[in-house]
Length: 118
Image (cartoon, rainbow, N blue to C red; front, side, top):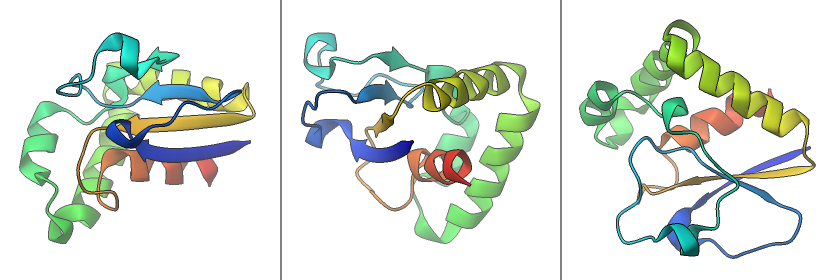
């Protein structure tokens, strides 16, 4: 099982890879045809409040990670979406988590990848 992450804007199509968008909001400037997603799990993304609070500030990343993990375990919609993501990962050889954030180090896909591969 392999779980990789990549910006949706940089995404290249690969055979045998299950593509999952993990953003709550659809990425600006990307058509559904161009995205060619297998899944869009918008409820696995952080809440709007948490996303706005974090604002991709590297100094807030550790606190964001902790709060986001709490959301994934306590919010029913997010918990169900994370369970669905776990099932996708467990049933496929290679899963690619796609996100729109410009920052490749500090975003929710990084947190999800860590949780899914622990």
